[in-house]
Image 1: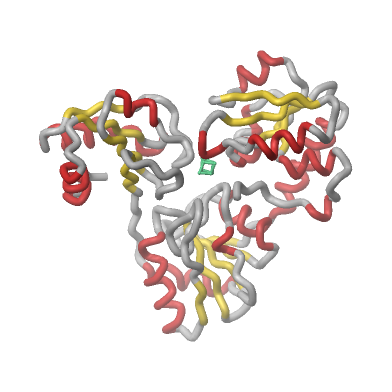
Image 2 (image 1 turned 180 degrees about the vertical axis):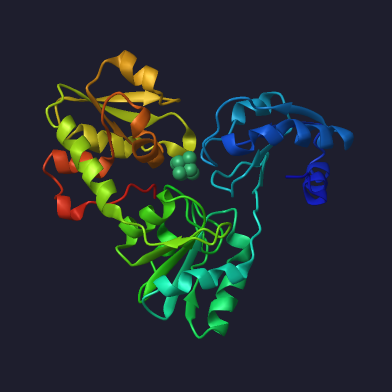
Length: 313
Ligand code: SF4
């Protein structure tokens, strides 16, 4: 990761003197290198050392000490005049798409990926078309401003009517699983760095979620978690969920940590903050942390057949 001349220009255009830097966990070790490079360009630099989960989680309080906040690793989600977003791109060879062909069921392929790879999605589409496939890449909007982009709380770009398959290009199984649960379509996940293609299987995931719901069924109280982070706050949803049970209490939190959940002593929680907390972090939590839809099922206002992945509109 390097400081681009475009970033330096944008900072100079804003007449910035002091610049605050914010990185997600995976990029944090780049912080001193980036700070040094900006210092050599004449800026005074400060670094946010707090956890950062996504573009929904801007360290805006640092603007009390800096002229501009540069948020690395993500595309814009919250608009602020003094924030610059610097997405992090990871290149790959677009020809790797041929590794996914044996798993595709049809010829009309929807293409989705995460922010690291959106810059190469068009080239992947060209490759597929040269092999006789039709491709669809949805324009960006809302929380996913780049064409074909998905994030862990929004899979709108994967809802492609008439597609035979959705081809997810990226690492990890969480996003393709999310795409499958959000769309109900046939999904192929291709890791562009290893060339391994697979079909995500939601059955194991759903049986774990079902077991958690059963564990939460007889909880004496439910804590409905409301995030104090601006881009994760779903207060109206939390209020609606709380109205479903007289055992439910709203709990406002900035950091949702195992220790804090334990300290509150509540037997089960419902998470309206970042959806990935319920899915990825459940293993760290001492008690069930349900999604909004799972709590609705528990309260009898939704059926298991209508299970949906949690997304933020
Ligand atoms: S809510 Fe979660 S998945 Fe969505 S942008 Fe924030 S950290 Fe990422």
